[in-house]
Structures are given as C-alpha cells and as structure tokens.
Image 1: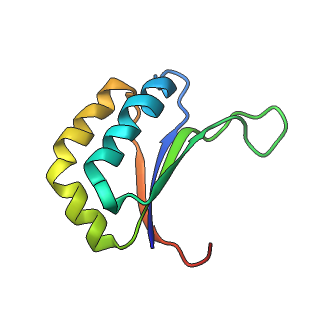
Image 2: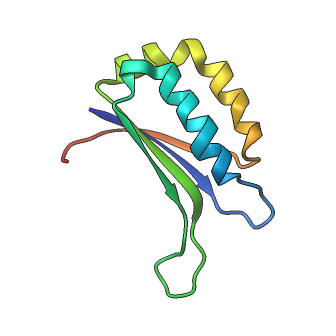
Image 3: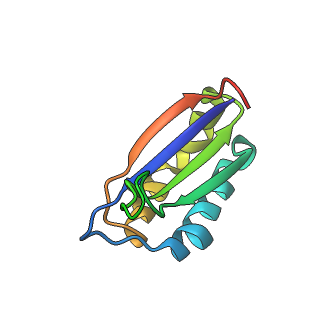
Length: 104
C-alpha cells in the first residue's frame, strides 16, 4: 500500500478554507480516484510540540492506495482538474510525498 501525503505549510498571510477542503476538494479527489482511493485522512494543524507554539502545517491529507501504479493510473487523467481546484481553498504551495506504508 502507498500513501500520498500533501502538507500545507503554515504561513501567517496565507488562506486555507478547511470547510471547502473537507466538503468539496477531498470528495472530488475520492470520486476521481475511484477504487485507487482506499481511504483518506485530513489533518488540521493545532499546535507545535512546545506548549503555545504554532503548528508547522495548517493542514495535511493522506490518501491511501493499493499501489503506486494504480494511484498514478487513476490520478493522471484528472490531474489538471484536481490541481486547478487548489486555488478554491488555498494560496499555499503544498509539499507532496508518496510513501510506501510498511506497518499499519
């Protein structure tokens, strides 16, 4: 299994619409990926490790897929639509990583 993680760094002047992300963007992604999306999780940053410190990321998502090949085959035809939707909820440039889930 693989996990696509998308992190949105916290930046004081940036916007992030958590409601849109949760109710519109991520359901769009799930619909377009079909069986290539086993599930997804959404994180909303609350704090850093030190008491009272700000979070490093305002939000993140983790999308689980059976294989990298299956994810890419499902995502690629919809890439432009999914990427274009980002402007509807944020102006933050995301950090993206695809990982192999080795335990869980």
